[in-house]
Length: 253
Image (cartoon, rainbow, N blue to C red):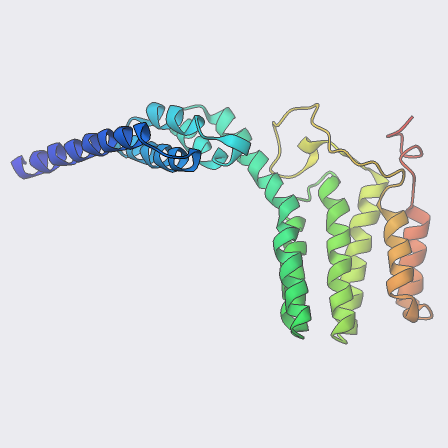
């Protein structure tokens, strides 16, 4: 027992010494970047000391552009501020859904440039599968962007001469487009995992039409060489009958 107590006292002293060193370092920091790094490190030490409130206060000082929202959420959760923690994580997760294409899409471009269509296809599939996780019992904006992602998968399938898989993904794209257009919702709360984020949260989209219009035009442009195929004809007919403008859907009055 004495040994454990000694180790605990030594650890506490080390933590306090670390905070003292960081505070002195802040006083002679030469740039804002140095101050950011020092405060970030201090927040970890405070948290390790069990002083979560001080950890939160320290990292809030440097949370420009919401860079540390996930760490703030962790501290808030530990402090019992569950609702605030949840909203921070939800916001970051939905932001990831939008920016994910910047990673997978650009990676797919690089693979295609290298002549590696297989990995380009896998990267695009990863994006579509990630987005599909945000679809819900109620159609929502994730269905809109999911439709376009699956169509991009189909384009890589076409380039790879994987026609059967190409049709599977065109059908998935059409499914999400028709599903959305039949009962469109731009409310953030309609999206899976985004519950409780605020009833007034709306995703802005300036297009006059819903999804089927644009998806149909893209299929005709990029897959028109299959225009005599019964699968092409059936998918186009389904999209054509389901397409609506926002005015027709009652979104714009």
